[in-house]
Structure formats: structure tokens, C-alpha cells
Length: 320
Image 1 (cartoon, helix red, strand yellow):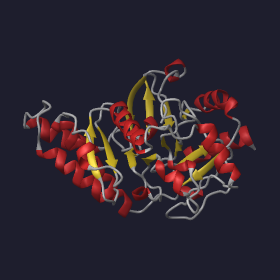
Image 2 (cartoon, rainbow, N blue to C red):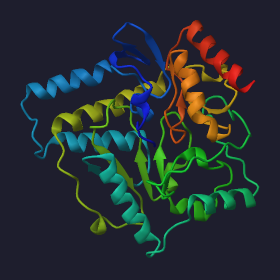
Image 3 (tube, one colour):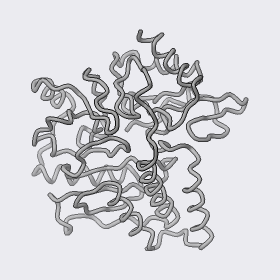
């Protein structure tokens, strides 16, 4: 996942947000196809989550003391992502990624895993396309998009979009992987999974799902986390599980030249040297795409015909 460095250079001050829409102080409305890298996947004002925040706040347990909400969060995560996991809850995403990287290096007996360029070469030597299966509507495309690189992740923890679903080789399972909702993927075969959960804002605790290669004794304990945040994140997970069982939006109806659509996610296929110009072109139409190609474009959970038409028209004007 990328960060929002540089986005404030272009984006007007956001006055309020609702669902997948942002509003500036002048009342202009923006369609948000970034949604904070997936943290606002289900919208910017998830009512169930805010009600849970209010309920726990009223109990007065705000300080980072042990509470029942940590175990409730872990129970919800096991229901969302089946597997034989040891689950640890960390105070931040950076802290969780640091622990994940330490475990993965240790699992490799101190040898660093492949760099991004080495991994790309390996995939191309194997004749692989970067393709993921849409769990509801089948494959979206067989085109091979560019693989955005992240110095922070160093390809120890990677996006699931990187892999060919049908032909994962043993070496590829040595990495950690981000969990992305609505994406069918064999998460249980990876040693470390970092869930990207739809909890708006970067202040939420970050769970880490740790698989069988590691013994419980070598794992760090949970970080102290406010019960308010643990309770709200558990509510978020159950909300996401309910979304899986409800009617899934017809994302397959979207036509987006320039992106490979994988369920609700769009992975850029165009020359990434053009990315900044593409970002500005969409923003001029009041459409916010990710400020960095490291994050996928995320289609809305609901939309109007006019919003869909504007996004598709802009993509077609840019990429034909």
C-alpha cells in the first residue's frame, strides 16, 4: 500500500465524506476511487462502526488496558480469513509490517527474499500473466500490468494482484501477502497475511495473521491497543462478512481502459511514467484515483449512472 504523500498538493480541503463521495468547502462533490488505500472500502461513514465506537466510549474503557475486545477481534478475523493462524494485534500498520518482515527474514534463515526486479523476471521467465480470479464473475483480463514497486515493502509483503492464481510455485509462498476483501485468493497457504480492513483512517490497530511455519514461542505479544479501537475494528470485520453474503455489486459492468479489473479493484496497465498526469486528469473531473500506483483503484459499492459514465468516459479519453 502506498501513502498520501503529495496528494494535498492537488486535492481541495475535504469538508465532509459519505460512502464513496467527498465534499469540499465549496460543496463540490468528488467520487473517491482511492478510499484511503482500501481503509474506506465500504464507505467513509460506516454507521455500524461508529455506533460501536460510541457504545464502548460510554463504558469509559479508552485506555490501552487488556479487554475482551481483543479476543472478539481475533474471533472475527478467523471467521473472515479461514486458516490455522496465530493472530497478533499491533498498534499501527508500520509496526505490523516491521514484525512481518522480521519473521519472513528469519523464516528464510537470514537471507533476503527476491527484490521486485528479480520477482518480475521470475514471473516473466515462467511465462506468467498477472491475473487474479474474480470470485463472483470469473477472470477479468489476461493482460500483464506493470508491477508497482514499494521500497517500504521490499516485496516481502506483496499485493495478491501480483500472482497468477492458477500457478503459484512454492517459492512464491515464502512471502507475506496483503488481504484484500472480495478477492478470491489462497491466503491460508502464506506464512504471513496483513489484512487491509475497511476502517477509515490510519489510526486503527493492524492485525497480523501468522501461519504454521512459526511457533507461538517466537512470536511477539499483542501491542497494547485501546478497547475502543479493537471493538470498532471487530465490528468492521463482521460488517465486511455480512457484505460478502449480501448482493455483490456488478463491478463487471464497468469498462476501464488502462486498468485490469479484478472484482472491485483496478490495477494499472499503462506506462506508470504517465501516472501523475492521469491522476490530475481524473481529479479535474472530480474523480479521485489513488495518488500512487502502488494502491489499486477501487470501484464503489454503489454508484449512479452518471458517475459510472463519467469515470468510463474519462478512462476512454485517456487510453482509448
